[in-house]
Length: 353
Length: 161
Image 1 (cartoon, helix red, strand yellow):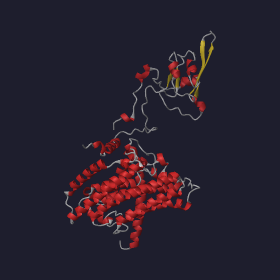
Image 2 (image 1 turned 30 degrees about the vertical axis):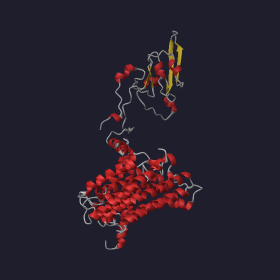
Image 3 (image 1 turned 90 degrees about the vertical axis):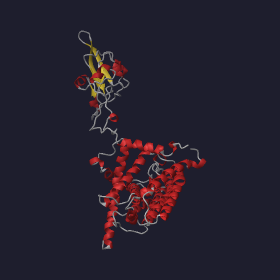
Image 4 (image 1 turned 60 degrees about the vertical axis):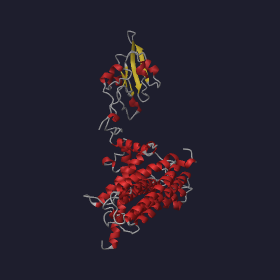
């Protein structure tokens, strides 16, 4: 578009609208999906098939009283929900909806996404710290510990993609998947990013930052009304963002035959998110030491090996990666995961399991 | 050497279970729209009283743990034992079925129904005439001879889709 301001305005509106609509869709998919995985029905009373359930909840929560605890740090307490939610929208600035259809095609797009999406952890810690409540504090501490553990394998897995694509710009990464999506060339990286993504957006089986049975609700125990809704929005926004990143980096983003590109991106996001819902519906919550062990002893070495493998592959075939690497990489995934499950022990002999 | 039980096979099994649930029949009853056929031996929350069989022995009233049954008897002109009134307060009834089990003349039945919401507590107290007017199918609870007349129970989990 000729005028940069028009471009900016259009894509800002598109980005924010996309996030809000996708959050509502994600809440619907999650609630109905989890219900269906448990052979239940889920919300189906508000509107056709219950599609307005999230909107009804939002209206309910708007009218609720906002409680500020007496012991809280007021300013930080009020700021935290915005700090959690704003990065989610900001990260969409570099997500391409189709070729070139992106607010800012940064040449460091991937770095921007990592940096910005990690920022919401700060908001979580602010919320936990300012609430003046031990459960909130514990939840926030767990969150920070988990993010510190998970960010490294996640970033290493993303670095593998950047190596293959030869660029940090998300649009270039999508363009590089013209021939074959990176999930086939880097199945190990996909596994690490998916696990780390599930953990980073604190969804079960890694949801012990807000483990209801232990910490009431974790960092947002004291929040109510619209501020709680902001956390809710932020949580699902992050889930959608993580699905978008996975879809963009590994599933070929907007690439695809027949359907328009933005629809392909949407389909892939929903697919990834649905898989997350599936794992959430199936797996029970892990313990904090199991989470740490999984991050540092399982995902971190595998992410390093993945980076090494992709480095060797890119060095050996600098122009185009041959397609027979796909079965080789899949075999590497199976062998490495089996090998590491043999080596991997929870607790390292210190903690009784 | 390689035992596959510890290599994520458990996760795969669990995922398969939840995936199978996706295609099963839902187990939630959509109540007002969808009603299931209840058990033939349901202890429904309404008492059915057969006036012609009742002798007024008041065994039911004695056995009722809630004291919800009141039987009034008196001798008539020929000095026969007759039932003047038979009053049951379904508001206090806990549907334990003891009165039905205790009745020596099979004059009492529990109802084959489960909906008894009323706006006033008074509406739940039925006397002799009102009990004679209610039209409810008797349940086969403690009356096995009635089982053949009632349909088999239906569970959503048994349904195929």
